[in-house]
Image (cartoon, rainbow, N blue to C red):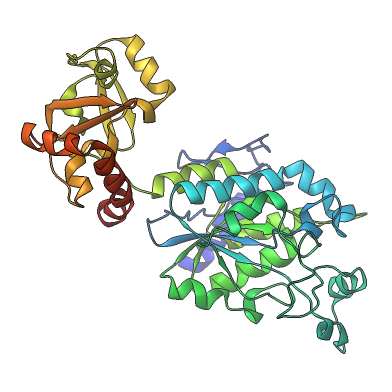
Length: 398
């Protein structure tokens, strides 16, 4: 038996063997120990799961058709997609992806669907193209006329507008059928240096699946966030079921929104002043103790917590619990680097004896003389440091 025959026999045996896995309510641990979204209409397939290891600066969230006609109860397609949208929590999950991308400073691309008057003169159409044209789905007066878009079926869902209209999100030219072959999505992604895609939106078995297939053919890694998609349900035809099967068989991975949000956050990276191979922050002092008195306490190596790339030690379990309840409140500003240094756009170490609480925040500096300079114009120093920190983070985060 040659190697190819053996591979086919092995796969056939896997398929024919009694499946011990069962459909899970929200996900399950696979052989690699990761939680994956398998709450679809099928038990997980006995095929590889390559996965996508998101890399800072190399990935983008791509959302397809986050528009009223699909996602609003007033939209013209709600009668057929509303059940699936509601079941999956699609509206809420897409917003969670927008928020996660914003929190992580990740790039976001929106691929919309618009039809202009001349599109209604096509000589032939597919089944659902004909339906969309018949019901006026995504209609606009023209490519240069946006006067009729506001609150129309072609408009963004209202809750998404703060994310999409933020001046950072890239809205590509509209796709005309299902896939991005007719728009400039791939070009915009390439020009932004993107090679990995977190894909979501509407509709699961039409535009999202078509985008997935095309992007994979274009050489991108693609992970589908399947509960941030949905599809039409008709008697005997479940679009989400059809899409889910192909997502699993074609994409590098299928994630839940929970998993996608976690991976996006992790891919942001960290920039934190730590010491030692164990990555201890604040030289082992209890971060909560700085807020309790002018004499901070050493933390115990037995009482610790992880936050933003640092391990913090605590003098008591009570302090640890207080920290975990609001870590951003207790963690030092600017990753524990010298605050004055950040204000002049450089990263410097710190001396713990310079620690001070001002306006409910913990600031440190490199030495006593620099502390005096920092405090001489405290508000101005903080303003400059706040302005510089994002750029330092982008340039040095790991």
